[in-house]
Length: 326
Image (cartoon, rainbow, N blue to C red; front, top):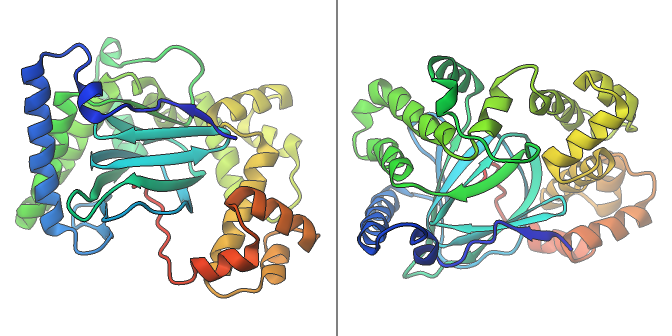
């Protein structure tokens, strides 16, 4: 079973840590206001907005697990609660916290709190490494936050008033589409600036720097995404990452909560699930993604997704899978 990490208690309880009750109420009111604004524009459950790299998502009821691949992204939940399983880790977060994924990670996410009266509402901003690198170069290194321990490729942290206001500025452009071209780049930089100041700043720095350990692991991950159906050669992956085999294994596990072999298997299973959703037969999907045994595929699929591939295929058809982390 995945290990739960960063489990978020109710939003008001988390927001109250170290803050006066009046500050908590102000921030909650601000989140409610932003949420109402976003709902006016959310024309579909997954809406690619006119603002570059900005996506909003809504759900009126809890969802079953959706297998997807998270791009490098940051996500702010405005209302409701989400659960994400990545490797052997499970994250549960809500409006008291924000999520950052700095690698292209296979995950299973589900909305766990949502109703027609209080739908799940979230905003996600895809991370632009060029913008991040430019911003980092102009910042005082002492202003960039760091969390103890080895850098992971995903994490959650408590939201701040400054970060909420930065998000409010970007999402406010939904009401003023004529301002997007001029103001969106500045407001995107403000969000990234606030993220860099927080405890996940070191993680964001690492993906912006070409020779950091996280970026080197990312090079191997990108190769695996393009060649998941091939036989895994750890020595070749370590060479791509510019590490020894032992070092590569250690840093890969720290970044993804998976071993390279587990990561490849997860990529294969997610790819097979997409094929099943589009109408492929189970055995054909298995061989297409690199399995040599249909029975092994069926066992591993059921272990990962809770039911055999043929039965899951019936449920999947008609569902929309999204990959921005929202």
